[in-house]
Amino acid sequence: MYQGLALKELGQPVAANSRFYKLISYGEAHIYDEVKMDYFAVSYPDLLIFDENFTRKNKAHCCYLMGLGNLGLGNLEKAKEHFEETLQLDPHHLLARLYLRGIQ
Image (tube, rainbow, N blue to C red):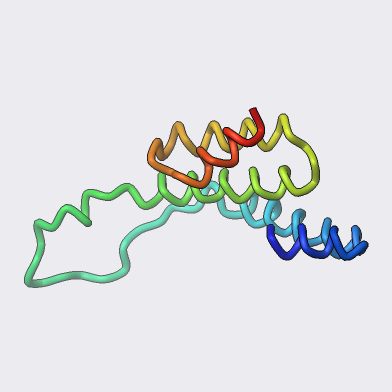
């Protein structure tokens, strides 16, 4: 997002929008990915890390990226919706909370 904002300030709106659309495209492409651990820890089978819902974290991350892309494009209502969805999935997502507060 910051690359896009910098390019916008440099008077390169096409290149800036390209960065913002990449964020949105990535989020849309990966929001429904099933994320699973691809390793097995023999000595620590009961770690809490295995209880983590990585698919949910991935969805929150994708919503956050789509929020950033829309924020950069100036689509504040869509950005707000994505940041709110991020916080529903991960209430402790600090950056989503900060950007949402900035929009409101």
